[in-house]
Picture (tube, rainbow, N blue to C red):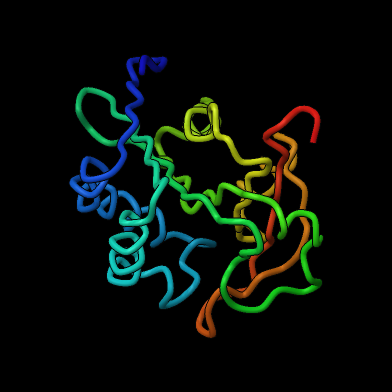
Length: 183
């Protein structure tokens, strides 16, 4: 995919996605070392690699990478959540029953190199990731104090619950957005 400002977006799926995990882990580790993203053990490189190597095996896993002069500057990935499924851990309040009952695409990560922020790269990565998805909704978890949380609100994402996805994780805002104009 052609990007902007010399940035090229590329979709990876299946085994192709798995081959990029080490490269994206390097960028993940750099971004998650800074506040407010340094939220504890769940966000270490080791735990990222554990869960991402598992997630990449899921049917429908999709990854978009962004590179400038062959240097990774951002990525976004996610996977479908079937009808009736929701985030692991505890949610308060319970998310809307219609949302849980529907097919959803869970945006697991949206990471942009600090030097590339504020130029539309995050929005382009997310748009490419969600383009032509068959699910009715997209969902994601956001750190409440992060600048990205307010940006998601401007992009039309709505908070539906707070989720603590693991005992050693902070409480995060669960956001949703319709992927179908008539939904």
